[in-house]
Image (cartoon, rainbow, N blue to C red; front, side, top):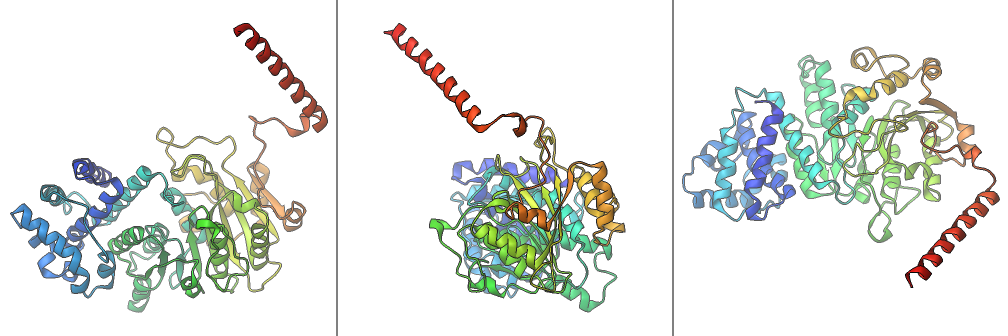
Length: 488
């Protein structure tokens, strides 16, 4: 049975629990509590679970009522009984939505019935969990501006930033920790799962290299379990990055993030003392936090998913874009296709930038790739895969293919090679810093002419357009008057 088939089997169990009033999102949390016990046995860290709650003993309870009572006791007390900090956090404030003991038995029996050992490789167990997270995101569509970042996009962003051993990486809007897990996987592939490293280097990669912050407790719980299953035990803070707690998140070698969309409730501004431009727009505040959290060594880098409004919003948006281009080399913007996130019509971009050693004048040229105009509509019929990024990766790297980028590319930006690609690909354009200033420092640039749209130059003078519109409205009004007379 494949990882995808196992994930689907687990997900289908939610239908069994409908009569218990359990929603998809609540089910994923419930499944997290129970599945973690089983996977601690599979991953062989069950000695960190209190003995009375370990899977072998838990599943052996025959009476449904006794099993149910033990489960509720587990949720209430396991955090106090374990010494493992991650397990403490996973079960902090845990509670069950299940009301019928028989439904708990259904879950336990189904999970135990899967042949985790023979049919599923160990590195697929985390894949199963990621499949469940994606299914949950698809059901939720969106919630409070939270979007599931597609794995092909995550992987391309990681590859192009080229993480290195010994670097400190962070996601200030961690969600389920997908970016950091992908960065960890990237480095494990290059180092034989860290086997080629020293003991000191391995400890650093496991406990310090990849950190994050997540505001929502349910998402934080899922992030902790996801990280644990991937062998990561770095700190993931349960906090608001835009509060004073976020001021401590700094001096990173790299940041990968997809900050939540939307505004603070009631237009509230963040409670940070270290941000120059405080806005009610959360993405603008996250962007400002991210570039300020990077080391000022000329090498620290970031890739951030942001909606279109960040590229052109006036006021604070304009000031923050100028500040970004001063403090960083904003070298690339990827205009993403619509329909790849689980909310219709959301238009997004990825900004790639490197923190400069100085505070001003770092951005000289901004390259923009348009994956949006006249692009396929991605969905079930046209899956969004890594292959969709092939032309962009070639343009970004200056000619290296998407298959070669992991092994043969060191992250160097060659302007000459980029220019050569631009001669062949009209989706790849460059804008000087002066040209952007002439556009009022708007970064809403680089979208090629869409054949479905009219050419603005062919529309005529505004006064003529207004007159034609008035004549059309008058004609419509006359037809409506004639219709009313006839009906009367």
